[in-house]
Amino acid sequence: ATLTDLDGRLVECRACPRLVAWREETAAVKRAAFRDWTYWGRPVPGFGPPDASLLVVGLAPAAHGGNRTGRMFTGDRAGDVLFATLSELGLASRGTVTDRDDGLELYGVRLTSPVHCAPPANRPTPGERDTCRPWLVRELELLRPTVRSVVVLGAFGWQAALPALGAAGWAVPRPRPVFGHGTRTALAPADGRGAPLHLFGCYHVSQRNVFTGRLTVDMLREVLAEAAETAGL
Ligand code: DU
Ligand code: SF4
Image 1 (tube, rainbow, N blue to C red):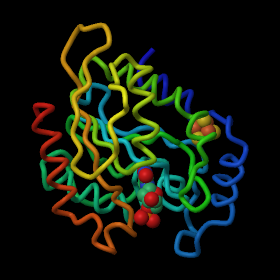
Image 2 (cartoon, rainbow, N blue to C red):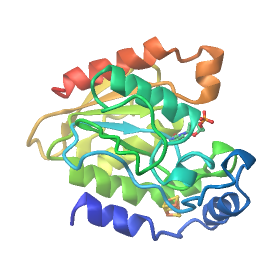
Image 3 (spheres, rainbow, N blue to C red):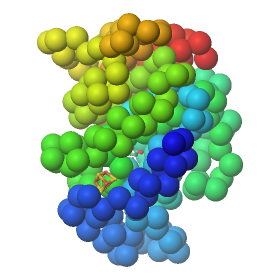
Image 4 (cartoon, rainbow, N blue to C red):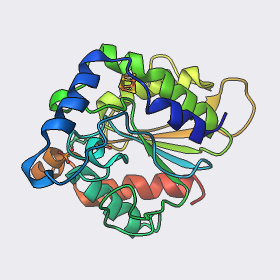
């Protein structure tokens, strides 16, 4: 199986009733500014090359962002900041995005999230996080030959990513490393074979965090640059 196969199966998933209802309801009602759009309204797959060496793990698609465009982080404020920064670092072909057919390319970077369907209030439940985990585990397993750095945006993603990394074959220290902005930790492969994976914590690039200054663009750029350099990008 490949990441393309995985993404093909993912978009058919209906395992979380509350999220299926929400993704479809927002797609039907829409936001006035997007009334001419045909919303995606389904699980949003990871975006980026199958041999990425840097993986960015977010939270969940935004109802009128990824849930509208069908591409991770595309069409919401969080994504606008993220793509602009990736472009500045030479990791994206452009700094602006519009929809999933805009031709944007990511270089060595893949974006994913621990929950693939838009949740009400951007807040998935712990149950939904656990239900969606196998998709992340499988994605990590398929990326394992090339992935060297993982940047996790926010505490929710961190809670989801650590067990997923453990299930995908990395040795997660006990007690588990605590989330914080700028946290960096190395995970050895559990079977002792291959390179370590470098895990980075970064505050989530949500509009709220950026607006309040909890996360500045400089802070985001610094973590992404360090993770990219560590990954050999
Ligand atoms: O800040 P905002 O543009 O309203 O983004 C909505 C919300 O979704 C925020 O918490 C970021 C998050 N998010 C994400 O984790 N992954 C995505 O692909 C898109 C948005
Ligand atoms: Fe399936 Fe994940 Fe969407 Fe739940 S959040 S329905 S597990 S894709």
